[in-house]
Image (cartoon, rainbow, N blue to C red):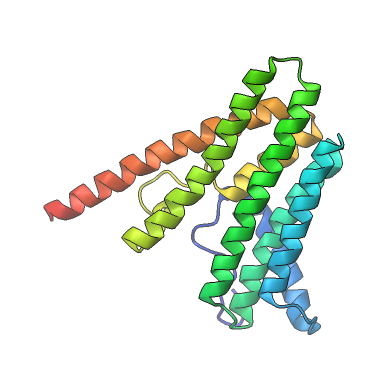
Length: 217
């Protein structure tokens, strides 16, 4: 909380809450304190470029640097929203732009990690490709559940029920960061695929039960 403005979000995942925000809030406060001429949308593009660069590094077999850049991009991704809140510059377009850029980065990073897995893992290419597609579709499904939930239910699905944060974007990118550092790309894709689809199924069940109880009242 800074000057009555809450910089974190109630929908933050566990990585954002305990790691990313500790760094991103300091960056945001420095930008505000020293009047650095950055807008929230400019920060969104910086995070976007870092994410794309990380993806390209997987294609040239540099997983450690790629993983570090993935996490840096994830941290910077929190700065745009914090900056918008502290400078009173929140806008619908800014939220829309940030979401679109995030999805492009998600796709690029999963494709890069899948490509690297195909090159390094002694596994059937079809198996690696299928797991990569499941990880990618799982990431997109988590985002779609959240976006569709906010549009249709007027509330973020993560705030409904007890299941929250197990497959949020910050968690997925942090898993990619760790998996890249220790060089377990295929296992990372598999974990992301499993967590994403478990979350989607459980969240649909929780939302259904929540609104069924509401109708009974």
